[in-house]
Length: 118
Image (cartoon, rainbow, N blue to C red):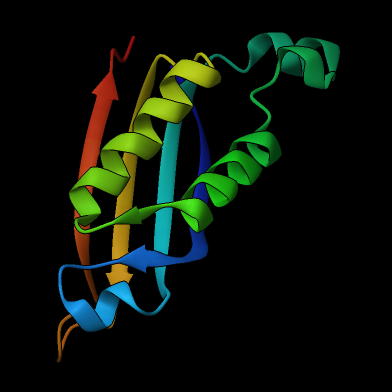
């Protein structure tokens, strides 16, 4: 299986468990690796059979900007579900991080894999 990826997609959202976090917007960063057979797109040089990473990115940006979750785990799971269901991606690895959430660390977050990798 080939992989189409998006690295460091940064979106501002409401995320966190503390009261002060619920009143501000914080940046989260996503890295996605999405399983996709690119041979058909490569053979035709047409977007019709390619995984449209721009459409994936725009959909996730819209969703995350409107979201208000307490946990990065919930946001990651919801974002993965969108990609799997709306874009017919059979497998993905999603890394969602919250830069600056822990003093002394560049970021913290989760990495999840969903679907079947062929």
